[in-house]
Image 1 (cartoon, rainbow, N blue to C red):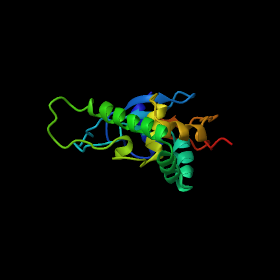
Image 2 (image 1 turned 30 degrees about the vertical axis):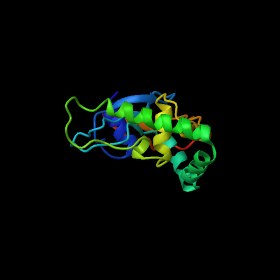
Image 3 (image 1 turned 90 degrees about the vertical axis):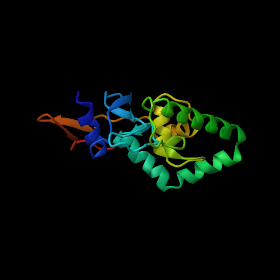
Length: 174
């Protein structure tokens, strides 16, 4: 499978770095990719795990549009134990990303934790991608509980004449 072509079709544009799949759906397609901390053009990039699954992106977009980031921030403000786990997840994420910096890298470095956030919650997509990649992330787990299962009956993308494209027969499962 041409992973780069699949991801390009899923996200609707060429990826800005190499493709390394961190998680797949039950149909074998990428759900999350690992993004290097320095993109192909030298730009520092804070987001280690990138969500590519169109179904997850759509469902999380609805949560964000309904005030999901604010709801997550309120949960963290009101629950010290949750906040502590969240802060550890942010530190782990930063460390995992920074460990992938090229040896001897002297240029600009990505900053922040999940999704580049200095603190709190910036992007539910990034938190979910971290969880889907197999990491402990309380906000990502909260999102997961609202959007899974990712139960497509048809693949979101298909290969037609050697090119991956959005599957015209795909629709969101009910």
